[in-house]
Image 1 (spheres, helix red, strand yellow):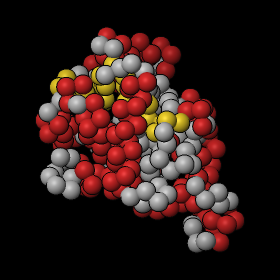
Image 2: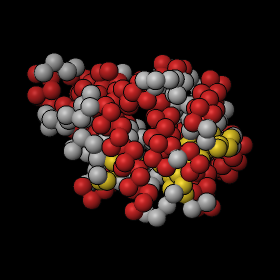
Image 3: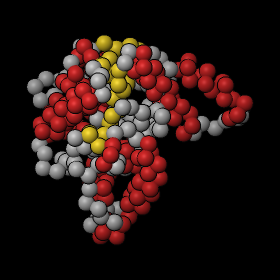
Length: 280
């Protein structure tokens, strides 16, 4: 646990209260969330229900051709466990229409890259914002501090939202929070807790295709973000030189995303965004 001197139950309660305060200050009652079957959206959905009541939380499940059946089932099970309303909107047909219209620009011999991956998340962001606008709801962002630190997210896609609930918690802390949520019963499905993290934006994609394992990444990010250590200090402390080089480079490239990130619930006292964007 990296968040200062706070116990995990205190982190949980602060996040719940932060959601409640944010919605109250903005005169809103209803939240919408993209429920993916992953750990981050599961935790945010649970916190939202605790803060706003299950009747005020709605989920959209937006599978693509790359979504695994177990992720879809995990998302459905999560919604059922929370007893919240949800709709399933497959995005494959929408994505194919976009790609057809982009073909004259991308070319017939187009090679798949991050443009196609980001397009999927932006389609999902558009659907979520359409729901939010139609029903006077606020979109809850599910990005964590690990992802935010290295720019592992899509502007105008999965970085969209009114507030980042987990934006000041590293991925390791999200898992710890999930364990706390499940302390009395398996509210978050066990398969969500144990499967390898993935954005599922291409076949067999995993987070560790792009990043070191979070057990290695999070202590390094904490040393940089929260302790202010620089390259030589990190290497001297025993961190792998190649990892340090890669992560410091990614952090530099992520700055433009931090400038455009939503406000976040400040837990650590050392958030990545400017203090003007901090709640709590």
